[in-house]
Length: 313
Image 1: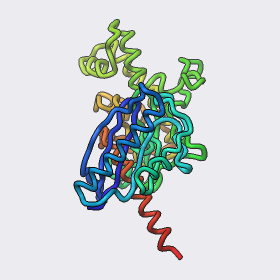
Image 2: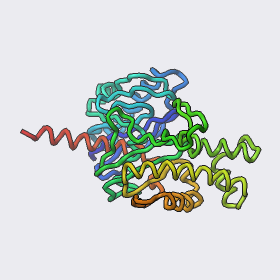
Image 3: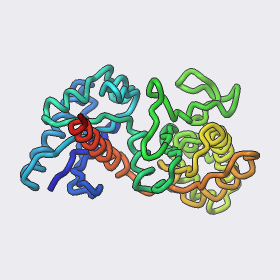
Image 4: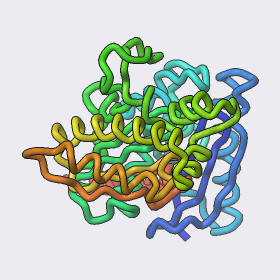
């Protein structure tokens, strides 16, 4: 069976799959990145993992993968195929596309982890059929993927979609990016965890605990949660004013609260818009498989582009 290799590299672990032409996950596997051994070890772990997947494909399907796609965190130069910087992995200017292509002997596409996950959500997940979408995962931080006609916009310098660094509270909490009052300091899962730990007096409490307390009508939890929802709505309205998406997809850990998040969020966004059109606001559908599925889509797109280039006079 014709297939591609898909790799989703995180801070501590890697998810991988062999993906068929119809997006079917034919084989899945996980490995540690080995980041405790340094950035060089992380790169070698990625190369070794990819080689294992290639060998498995030959053994299982009788042929090697036709291409590979890899999603990585941090700053990514997708055009040059370079993993430019990742604080979590400690690397700088790693020519990952060329390294993988040399190890595997096939074309390789490199993408940013959030944009790659957004590509999958937009094409085959919660945004399927939408010509314009915005994917916003709420995790340790907040990022975004801007979807336009089946592709995701990376911007002129690879920074498109960084909605987490829209300033929603001028003069507010300092952000590691150097600004103050950034959205992710108020509405990320990490920010809600921090606020609820302080409000509840339990240093181990997290955002999931806060959501449970909200469902039980705990007034402190409701206050903390509403502050986060209001900040998120402020940031989202700025984004939809600029981008006019048809579908707004919310993912990440905070979205696991379900309607505890989505009911007040939809109302908060609705209250804030004036001339703007209200997008459909939906939860992400693909969970932690989005990165692998998106990497697989990058690989298949690469083959389509390569084939088209080869047959064009």
